[in-house]
Image (cartoon, rainbow, N blue to C red):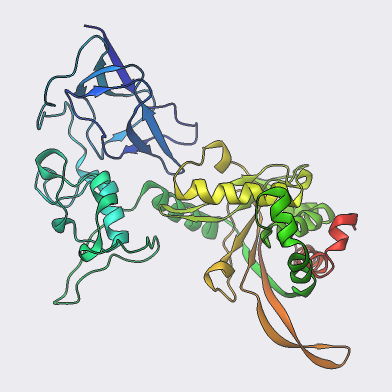
Length: 402
């Protein structure tokens, strides 16, 4: 017998603990080296735990939903054993999940979903009791939830921000635990509002020049670079141009010190099934429009799959949040600490505006920049937003660094 321990991956210094999702193997089953055994959810990303060796899973030490820390033993594999004809059924794990992470009713009851499965079913609008669970004691696993369909038809599209779909008969309620990411986002936003003197300044930008430029070159751009030409890359370039002119907007507070950053790491707020994440465009001033579009597309795809790394979600000197993709017309974004400012962009709509004494119809977008008034005065905030507006209305300036 050669026992190999399966350990919790090393978490970053800023993450003290994580939550186990659903085991993909049960005791007695054969595993291959690097086969994914379970996923570990932190407040930033979901980490996959691969099998360190081929063999047979002999023991699960930590159950679904357990809270774990770096280096803890999750399971044991006998690298010299052969899988039995049938996996061990309902083998008790060495350590039960803590009560706080448990489902509202007994985890051994049929039709009860694991935390990860419950979240998926809530997004689909599927009642857990209607799903045949393949886990121990009939527990509904993440895989069961992913294959479940609402009402026997095709599953509803995921709606991460929508509440669970419940029958309107009577007065039903459904309790769904927050994911670690959702809880952490709530904590950070509340911290931001409590610790920062947040003020928001607004302006509007005429998007005609950028829309004309995009319409003229979008097909050639996609053919040349293999990615669609969107609008966010222009906002990133305009933000960087403004931050260069007004470095205080790119700074952060550390106690009673102001830290001026000589680089431009721009956070791009991205929605995911687990909640809002903000991956970072490193050295955005050195990236081309194509580079930015490729990274944003990659961030979006991997955010949906929970594949972003901790490094990609750490740091940042300024952020951009685009509520316009969901139809938002105006908002006051909350600063992502320890940053001191964030740009909110919104839906572009045709509106009547006055040009040279004449009323004309133009595609207009409202910009909102929230900033920490402790270190950024209104003058710098307003001028920085005006600089972004001017760069967007005359995009050639971005190419000439004006």
